[in-house]
Length: 276
Length: 335
Image 1: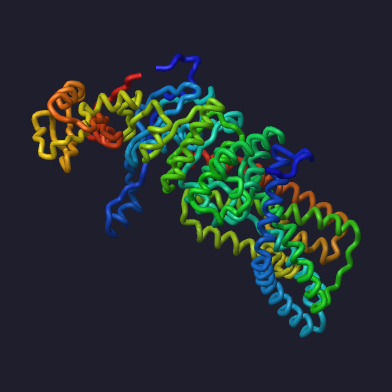
Image 2 (image 1 turned 90 degrees about the vertical axis):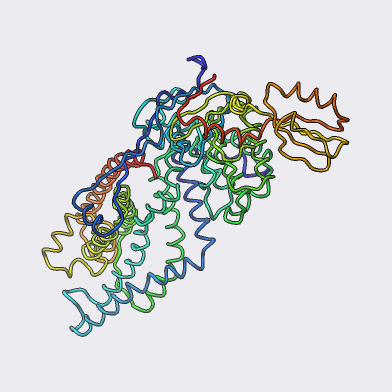
C-alpha cells in the first residue's frame, strides 16, 4: 500500500485537529451542491431583515436611529459570515449520539470528544467561507453596503469570529448535555434559541433594542457569539471597545469551557451509571 | 485460577444494578406517577468473578439479557459497577485513564465508529493521531492488518459504499491499529455471512498469535467460540454458571454422545445399543451414554458389517442450552 510517506505527521491533539479538519473539508467538498443550497437557504433570513430595515430607513428619510441603509447592508452581509461561524454541533444531535452508540465509541478513546466537534466544525468553516465569498460579492453588488474597515478592525474581526465559534460550541454542548438527564428537551432548546435570537444581534442590531435589552445582552454571552463580531467590522467601534470586546469574549471562552468540562464529568458519570 | 501476578483481567464479585422507573399502563397510573414515582432494581450482573491470563482468548456466553454486554461495558470503562471490583492491565477500567484506553479496544458488532462519508484509510489516520502511533509503526501495522483481512481495495472506498461484512472488517482494522493488548469483542460477527465470519475468526486468531493479545469475546455463533476459545465463561441472569474449558463443558453437561453408523443391513434393529435418533437407508444415529460409547461401538463392529462409524459430541449449542436449562442455581467453576 502506498500512502504519503516521508513527511512526519502530527500526532496527539494537534494531529487529531489536523486530521479531523482535513476530514471535514473532504466531506464538505463531497457535498458541494448540498452545501451551496444550504448557504443560499441561510441567506434568506438576513436578506428579509435587510429589505425590511432598508425600507424602514428610506421611509424615515434615510436612517433608523442613525443607522443608514448602507450600514444595515454592511451589518447583514457580515451577519451571513458570522452565522456560518455560529454553526456548531447541534444539541439535537446528542440523543442520536447516545442511541446509536457513537458516544460509547468516543468514550473508549483517549481524547475528549469536544476536540472532534471543535476540529470538525472548524474544518467545515473553511469550506463555508470559500463558498460564502461569491454570495457576499453578489449581496454587496445588490445592497451597496457602507464599509469603513481599518487594519485593527480586520484583525480583531478575524479573532472574534473564532471566539464566537468557540463560545457557541461550548454553550450548545452544555445545552445538549441536558440529554443525559432527560430526552424531553425541545422546550428548553426553544427557550434558549429564542433568547439567543433576540439578545445576540441576530434578529436586529442590538443598538435598535430598548436600553434594558442592551444592558441584558451585555451581561449574557449571546452578543459575543453574534452581534459583537459583526459590529467590529460593520460599525465604528473605538479601539477600547474593540479590545474590551475581545477580552470579554476570552472570558466567555474560558468560563464556558470550564463549565462544559465540569458538566461533562458529571454527565459521563451519569451515562456510566445508567448506560444506554 | 490464574496466579495473581500473571493476570490481564481480574474481576471480583462484579455487580451492576440498574434502577429503572416503572409504572403500570393507563391514565390513572400515568397521573399517579406524576406524584409518586416507583422504581425497580434490575440486577444485570451479580457477583461475577473471573481472571483472564495474558494472551488468553475467552468466550463469554449467555442468552440475550444475560449480562454479557454489561460486563464488557464495565471492563471497557463505559459503565461503573454498583458492586465488586475489576482491574484490566492493572487499571480500574471505569476510571478511564488515558494509559488504559490506549491499551485496550472495544469492538461492538452492531456499532460503527468509522466516518461514513470518507474512505476507511482516512479514519485510520485519525486513530494514528489519537493513539500517537509513530509513522513507521502505523504504516507497517496498517498494511499488515489490511493484508490479513484482505481489504486492500475496500479501505479506499467511502465507508457508506461498503457491505456490512466489509464495513465490519474495516471497523476491526481501525480498532486494532494501536495494537491493543486487551480486546473486548461484543458479537463481532453478528449479521455476517459464513465466509465473512470465518475470515474474521481466522484474523482474530492470527492477531492473538502474533501479538499475544488477551481477548474476551461474546458471540451467539458457537462457531466463533469453538474456533477461538479454549475456555468459556457461561453467564445467565447476571451470574456465572460455568467457567472452564469448552471440552469439559461438553462432558460435564452432556453425558451422551452420538454414534453414527452405516451398515449393509438396511433393517437392523439397534434399540438394544442405545436410543435410535434416526434410521434411513442403512444409516443410523444412536444416542449413547458417554462412558458406554467405546463398548457399544465395539459391539456394533462385532455384530454387523460396518461400512462407517463415527462418534460425535453433541453440538455445543445443545450443551449450552443444557447448562441454561439445568443449572439456574448451580455455579460451576472448574478452572
